Image (cartoon, rainbow, N blue to C red; front, side, top):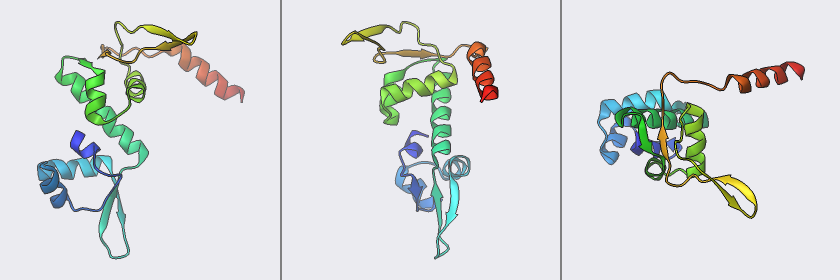
Length: 146
């Protein structure tokens, strides 16, 4: 999946070419194309596949969850971010959206501003997931007031 993530946003190759060039089994390529791209046809009737931003986020979330599942729901966020070529701060946001915890996260002060240190973090996913209901209630009440 990480190899597929690194493909360009617009893929003009056929599934067979993608499979051969990236050494990914053809049935897996076809499944990834179906799940994480939209088809688009050009004037010469060639199919091209487009990874839209929502579908790009979807594959990133799938990779994070799969990695957590394979590693007993704990993994090093920095290694995962480097593998996926994603900035640590952006990866931190993705992991927070999934509901991950970061045991041992520390705040640092830079120029008298408090920031979270997102280096050398272990992310953890505990089940059952608990969402911040207070924040959701605030968000919904703000929508109703506008």
